[in-house]
Length: 240
Length: 221
Image: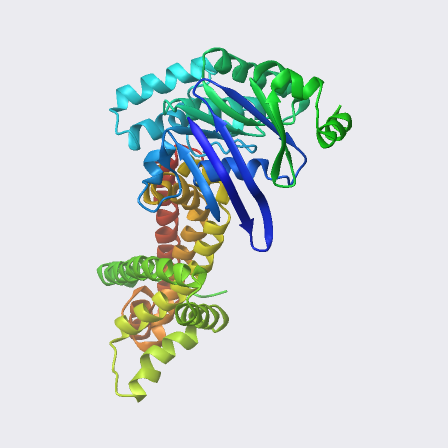
């Protein structure tokens, strides 16, 4: 379980998270929606300890993420993360991209790492691209590679940061389909997204972020189709 | 044109010329290796916020890049000599070339490093890699690809610049050529052969560096 407890986070004078609390149970899919600059992505970076927090607490399976004594590299193995700008490693083939972390972080044998990487690449539909360099692929394919690369570490949670925002419209579908598949398989996910249809259909709950706080959170269909907070209503009327 | 070429005298002295060529290659390789090591340190110092290191690195780079190589060699040989530090011609030329190589390569390394997006680092960390692993497997290999050709150019440049050793009496290829031609008065022949030898040395260096690149980067470069 991921438990975010009253987290505050500032960049210089700018406070981007102003007391955020959120519990995500194992097997749950939570989507975070909201305008740009509302702190959605920052929350993911804080959960993954890529960004430090100013106050509050984030627990992942009971471990305090930001405590000094926590081994953050070890902790991140549990937390797969996929970025808006996919960030594939351009100097490695698709297979090497996916096999590297299992090999060097989990210290698997080369054969094991390759086997697991192949399996995850097939999982996201890139089984025929193993020896291709990522720069030769479309954004959608690179984003699916990023998902497979994270899955190859067998994470317990997936953090997805606007994974379709940088894609051409015709490539969004293939990535969302991949995420749907993961959700059906029971992967716990926190998705920052601008895809309202995806948030409504795939997630269990939806949280609406407004200026650094969660303005509304509830069952996905209800928040998207029948929001209670006027702020949420205003936001959704604009994005539709 | 009634100049008569006499090549025989050149070929008789081939062993000495080859010996000079070897010294040229020797001093350039050493200047390159030391230059790379120092440049890495200077680049780190320049990107670091600690003032004194950054200051030293900046001064080094600015002097190395904005003064003539000839001046550097004279400073190392005659300049230090005036203070009682007497370097051999070989060491003087070597130090000057190391100084310049380090200056130029510092900027090459810094540029290469800064051209790798920081998100590559975040992505590596998100997979559970330690900082050292992220640099070892993700950042440095990409950087090396980008700076490989500028580095090769610097190497060729320092081979050619080592010919300035002639001015402080160093017995590298140019110095040897100079000495032999003044003994035999076959100036044109000796310098033509020396030029061809320089050409062959630099071409060999470029060829082997592209072979190495192909092995290192799997034809990606």
